[in-house]
Length: 357
Image 1: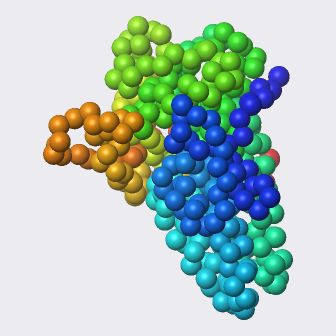
Image 2 (image 1 turned 135 degrees about the vertical axis):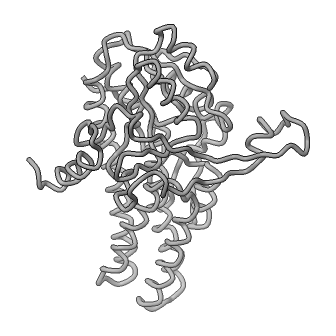
C-alpha cells in the first residue's frame, strides 16, 4: 500500500512558480506566486522555499523565470544565452551548501548551451525540463520511501531532525517519505521530531505536515535525544541531507552530527535518506563541503523577540557534517547504500545509469 500525502510544496502553474511560504509556519499555510528570477533568488535565500530537493526544483523554475523576462527584451539568441547563463549562475549562489540547487541549475544551463532552438522554443524547453524534474522528484521520493520502509521495525519510534518531508521536496519527502511508506503498512509507527534550532524547522514544519497526514508525532527539544535513546524509546534515526560527499560524509541541518554521535553511543541505527542528486561525487570528503553562515538574528531572536543579552557574540553555521562512520546506511531511489560508501555510491550511480542490472 502506498501513502498519499496531501501536500504539494512547489509547482509550475500558469508561467509562475507557486510554492508554500514556509516562513509563515505554523500560523499560516499559504501559497505565494514567484514571478521573476530575482524573486526566486530571494525566496531561496530567505527560506520561503527550503529543503534540498525543493530548492533544486525552485532553481529549475528560477531559470525559466529569468528566461521569460529576457525573452521580452528583443535579444539575439547568442546574447539571450549569455545573459541567461550569467543569471543562472547567480541564482545557484543563493544557498551554497545545498547541492541539489547547483545540480538542477546545471541541468538547465546544459540545455541552454546545447539548444539549437529559437528563444521562444528554448523557453518552452526549459519549462518542460523543470516540470519533468518536479514529477521525477515525487517518484524518486516514493522509491526512497519504499526502500527505507524495509528497515523500519514494526511499531518503531523514528527520530528525525529538521524537516526532510513533503515540504522539503515537491510533495512526498525523503526522510519523512520513509516514515510515510512505513506507516502505510504499519500504523503503530510514530515519530519523535527534534525542534531544530535556530529556525525550528522540526517544530514549525515537521510536526505540521505529519499531523496533517495523521501520523502520530511527539515534539522534543534538540538536547533531549540522548535521554530518550538511553530509555530505549527511539528505535532508529532517519534524516535528510543537503550534500553528501563521495565517501558518504553528509552535510545536513546543524545538530545532525550531535544526533548521530548519540545514536552511535546508544546503538541506534542512523540513516540518511536522499536522492542520488544530493551526492556530490566531485568532492572526496565532508571537509570540502562549504558551510553556509546564516544571520545572527536567527540565534538571538525567536519570532522577532530577543532571547539573549544584547552584544553577545554569535556564530551561526546553518549545517554540520556527519562523518560516514556514524551512518548506518544511505537510503536512495536505487536502494540502501552501505559502507564502503566510496564503492556503494559509485555502484549506485552505475545502477541509475543502467550499467548494472
